Length: 87
Image (cartoon, rainbow, N blue to C red; front, side):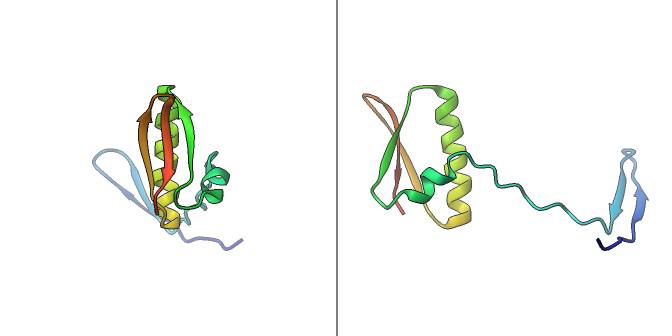
């Protein structure tokens, strides 16, 4: 592993600003990634009506879509909220 030269600066807030430290790789822990990857344009799945589930799926769809250049839409139906791949 490469050693880093660390430079420290004090700020008025008391934090030390350090340079020369590599950022760790971003973890890809999207629990819906497999579902999103299998979807073709026009495919959809029912999320249901649980607010937490809807919020989580919307967040992950936006994040995953940004990374893969895909777009998802959400609409409320009689059975609950449904997610469609539109691009």
